[in-house]
Length: 170
Image 1 (spheres, rainbow, N blue to C red):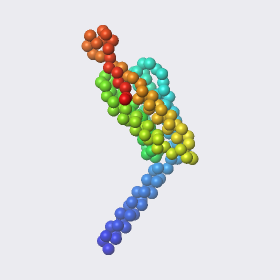
Image 2: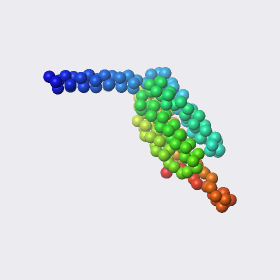
Image 3: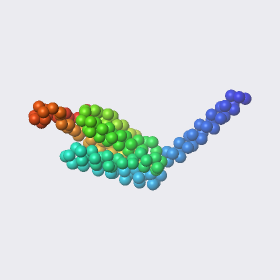
Image 4: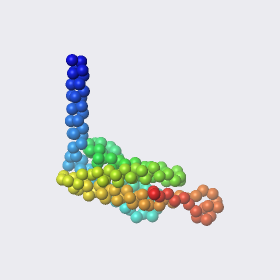
């Protein structure tokens, strides 16, 4: 009887977790609209042709402001929220690396996660608009990955020759 009671409790707990997970995975119209609006801001910032890297990265950071809270507040499903959050994590890693003037490619892995997640986005109704925007978000991640970020080298000799380090995803 002890094992039956324990199994019944485990089953009840698992059932309640699955039910709450199914509710959390529901992608409401409000959440979809929030996702679409945010993804379009991220795409626009990534595709900005501003040659000034400080300004370009600042635009990306501005577009990412509050993305985690927005995803949670709208109870976006994991497959949707991870795209926005990974994109912004990549932007944050890029910003840290650029400000430190050191070559680091952590942002590349974050953007790869966006691209992988976009491939898993459902394309059937009612997610057609999300799917299309998701593919554009993945393309925007590719744009950032393909951008060369040049740092000024320290030292009078390197500065005089205009040498700098270039950081770009492989």
